Length: 247
Image (cartoon, rainbow, N blue to C red):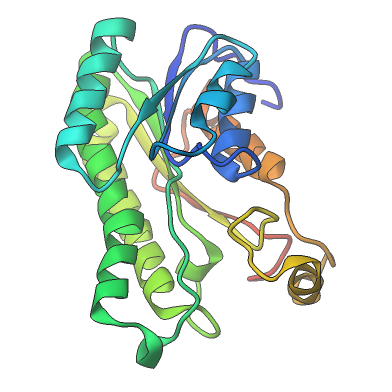
């Protein structure tokens, strides 16, 4: 279970174009366990660099997760070149540190489009390919902001609560097709999404019982477990990975 064999599996990871981010760490670990990884993100980031450094040959394909046509094009390319998709990691997301009164309608819609609609479009796009193949694993990135309300940014929390609901519903609907759908709920993870430098990181660590921030690699370990056969009876789960932050 610690070292699942993903030989021959085709994985798509969204939002993997930040070199030190969660998506890149997930892509690296999936590839190290034998998967062929399609790294996706908006153009202009480190997606190409991440893809070329994977343990197994990977590739970068640009993707705006809010664009239905872009998802269709991606799936057509992956089907033609790789035969299908076995693993989807819906990792792409945006952060907005603002409460209700300070969140404009435009800002709210943007967060929902990326964090919520992007996850829906990903599941919608891969489900037919996974159904044809007899199964697959979808891993949606939620957050501890989707587990509690107090102290969480309004739009971000709303989008992550929605991801929980979509994950459970999709897991129920797709179970008969052999498709598992799970959500991971990271706590405070040391990625470029955290603003404010070392001082803010130290402040945030003070809220965590273990006294430290999580690492992208620790999140990747959970993703790889959910992608492999060791989790074959897990679907519809919401797994907090937060060092007891929400305990």
